[in-house]
Amino acid sequence: MPGFTALDTTARLPYSAHPHMPVRAQFRFDAALPYGVCLVLGPDGVEDGAVAWYFARELLNDGCYGPAGLGDVRVGPGRAGEVRVTLCSRAEQAVLSLPAADVVAFLHDSYVLVPPGTESDWLDLDAALARITA
Image (cartoon, rainbow, N blue to C red; front, side, top):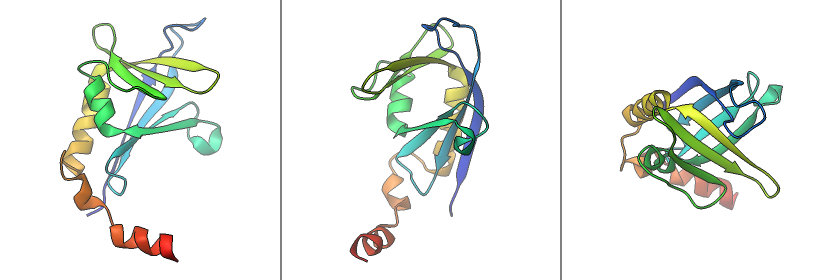
């Protein structure tokens, strides 16, 4: 039973020149890719110039309760009611502040679709191997 969920929210860039300017953000989860989440920032969609970052769903969950992540994506609690997501590239980094209630609601919806610990049940390894060996 395939499933998909998305949640629209607003991010802020607390360390930017305009820390109170809202940035459109959307979390996406697809049960066909059960270990990851996608965070889309910017206009209506990637096709309209938005930027998409993919990272582990477990990282997002762990970051709600304490610092998590070592690489290009780090997540941790911010001020009361916030989750901070730090996105790093070779030359730059952006710190996003997102409403914790929205992050928790999104994670809840993703866990309804694919409960934690059952992710491997959702992978179609035969199809993936067929694509690799074709």
